[in-house]
Image 1: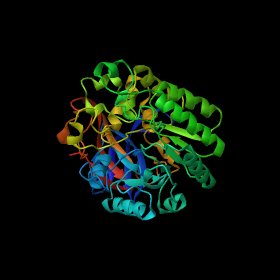
Image 2 (image 1 turned 120 degrees about the vertical axis):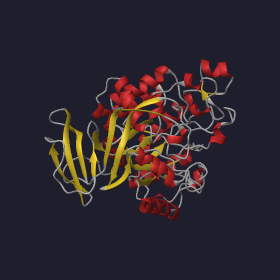
Image 3 (image 1 turned 180 degrees about the horizontal axis):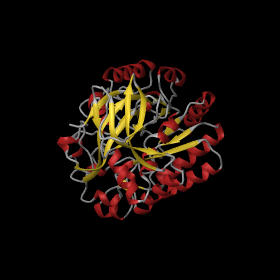
Image 4 (image 1 turned 90 degrees about the vertical axis):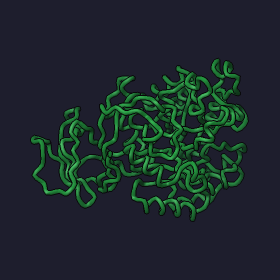
Length: 426
């Protein structure tokens, strides 16, 4: 396989340079500076990447594939197909499947089924507590041996801090990372959106910022006491960014992420009860959105994820207070990251690192690279390709995007996983 005329970032020159890439036996065998319009190679598959960026494929640390248990919302095949169409070849699956990923056999079954599809690498998070009920901690050692990369409650808070302390102590003994969304189990538990003027105007129940920060302070204190590795999922507020920034300065073993939608949307986007803007945590104010960007730029927040959550159309047509939370994001992660970078005057290669290299580093997994001798995990995309987000063109089984009808820039042309072509545009 050859990728011809693609633009590859050169760290030395600090710019993108046209190059030809030869892939065989699963690895990048050769990278040549392109001096001609074609190639003399006899390779049977040639990808014309003229005017396209060639980069390492993406790692998305929050993709709900909805299988097993909710196949009417999404199947493993549909969501992996959506992922590779977005340039993603490695993804993290939360444990809130049905049944919950709290037994080794279920974890192995999920991983083995993903391998059969040969689309993307699925790395699951195991349940922190049995059935995610917050009472009894799971057999983390067995789940880790089965293939889990960490342990999480997904979107379910733990009401009993003694259980939380026990879980952190156990995980710390084996250096297992804990992935938790800071969410108070009581404050705002019946809320629909961010507490503020828009919430009041719409007559909806609010979720105040303190629902996140009170839980966050507790999590950080327990992490400090136990020396546990803590990853904070989906920060949403200015106050949370400030708290995490100070905690990192104190040397706590913590990392954090943000969902790509939170870098674009605010509570104002709920508008006239747009259920595609109902999320956990809720989209907050403009100052919160700006603070999340500042957190990414100064390293307080480590990477960006899609927080991909397919929801069936019927659930999203219910009244706002009854509708399910969540947005799809795998096919939009790249264009939304590019537009965020452009708006904030961030270099493209630095923005791409936030959905690839930095995410892989936190996972303690191989960092995909476009260099000779590396395993070929590569994404080719047209940075200036414009396209409109439409239900009929999205490959995810879920169509619940706040950006339906929006024009996007940046479209994946080809995705290669472990030397295999897993997606080709058209």
